[in-house]
Image (cartoon, rainbow, N blue to C red; front, side, top):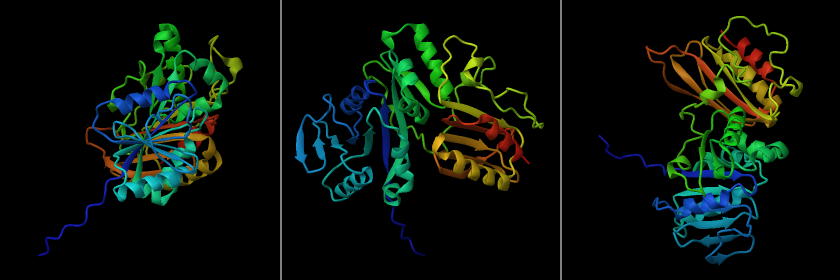
Length: 361
């Protein structure tokens, strides 16, 4: 009998996307991550070089980009070209033994929408064969966050895409202002854990290896988002009837119950049901929804109860890209149910809810 073992496939290199609006504190956080004694070698790709940049020890300078070797063994390069090309070059140099790193952090420019960066890891076969997108970390400035979210659509995108939200400069605002900002962030993205950070000091476990794009990762939804008194917690509950009361999904600002209700374009909603989905109808509906609303769908994720399957179906997507795979079997002690969260720009919640209800078996 042969005892030969199959060749071990090399582990994928984890990638973290670090985003946040101008001045939120991304570079402070990045410097903190790089100087921490976590024993990991990190390649940093920056697509802006501001005055605060970390290019302190330039060792190599090439036309088109710079690769910087830091004193703690980190590598840094600026993106002046295509992200795919730079990731490819890093992979080639790593394979040849010219560069040694365990993971990649991409710091996006403060004005960037993280969406296209995320999609790179799913669209390009060479990249997805070598790299694994671990998560999107968004830094929000507690002092200027409200104003930035009011004025900058990019800042709203950054919140919508996040797996973790880090609140910087929390010491500069009152507790009431901090809670108001937190409540707003929860309305926009109830699946991102929110953590205050002081001068970039943060547990490494909060930003690295969070498995934000892993289908098996827990679908966390902030319980505050589902609280019944919450003005935006219009959850589609398990009901067998399909009628809606007039105005039920109305988000018009004139219906505001608060003096400071911010009418954000990026919002989240949750769909829940105890009834199983008909798999064919669901696939057809989701395919259509992604075609029509894909550009405005930032992140969506769910645990689905599907008729005829003893297992939960794990489902998630970014913009037009959607994937699903079977998860663990439902336990005898569990009541199978569906929970899905959609985060996007001006999504018609009533259309999604009604469509999903019509896919129930």
